[in-house]
Length: 158
Image (cartoon, helix red, strand yellow):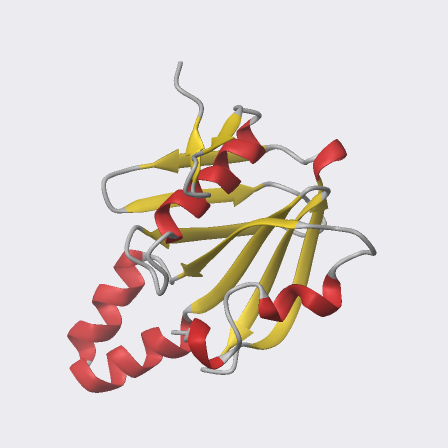
């Protein structure tokens, strides 16, 4: 898992991908793991090699909501080396599905050219991972988001 303190904070990897004047609103850490049946099958075959295989097949992401776009960086290692960049303009977002449960917020962007799917754990590597993931999900689903006085995004009450 990426350590935000070792890379200069969660927004640090995005600085070279921002457009002039673009502001980051929220950043969340998420993962895309293999299907649960594959995980169980690999671990049942041999515990340690199975766990190693699952770790190698898991993709880590940092996702940022800016005032203009959603940017997803596939990262690797403690220094958050960027392996892939996916970006989606807020003005023309592809169809997306989001859900928030007791533990995870799931985000799926169904873009035929560059699909994205990840789940964001409520604990995450940063204390505000859940709130940030929920704000990104709200932006994708078109729900209004308000910012609390402490600066943590919250879903607008209905």
